[in-house]
Length: 193
Image (cartoon, rainbow, N blue to C red; front, side, top):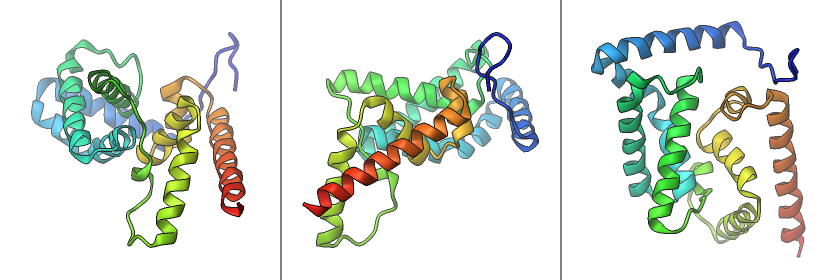
């Protein structure tokens, strides 16, 4: 929905507002007491790790980068650089920057999507399917890959992605729907060959 100045306006549910209010309280307390930051760490560790694993594709490196993202976030708590973003959105922005920095150091940034689905016992057919899907995912634009990583690896809702990217929730839902439809059609076309 567009506001009076032509800016995107995101409407928040009462439950999400309560969550943001609780989170703000934790952030204020974490500035005074580092032990409170541990609760935020536990709350968001999984989402940040899965997001970085999807971007990097290496478990050990994703663990290291997850730690680095939280260290940077902790150091920045007193600077209030979140600019009104929910903590997870701010933390994902830090994690993204950590991944970009690591990619520069490694001279190649690559998104891996094996983290988007739970592991299962591989069969010849499932391996072929996985390879085809990864090939199709690599053909997507970086923006589309980023949306999929935020939604499925980091586990963000459309509303959270919209807040992070400064877009409307409807636009994010529509983009995700179109990306998934595009992948499904390409997958079926390739599988039929």
